[in-house]
Length: 120
Image (cartoon, helix red, strand yellow):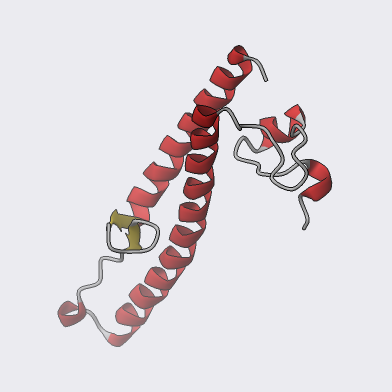
């Protein structure tokens, strides 16, 4: 992959990273002690809430936790891809060592494998 392509994909990854971090900030707070560095939140005030409101807030927290977990995984993949760019290993399939198809990288710049290995 040439330098121009690497810069192009690096920009795509950095834009996607900023978007994911903004999404995480909406439903989570940075928490260095948690596995992904984020912890889902909800604005629950137990003393002022009735039982239904408390149940709704716990449900919201559960949904935020699931979304946060998914976003953290995407963020980790993006950070790995950015690291690979720095190491000169970006765009190389982790299974067979061949070049990952450009179309796959366009659709998912943090792809780890070629299309033929994407379902393993």
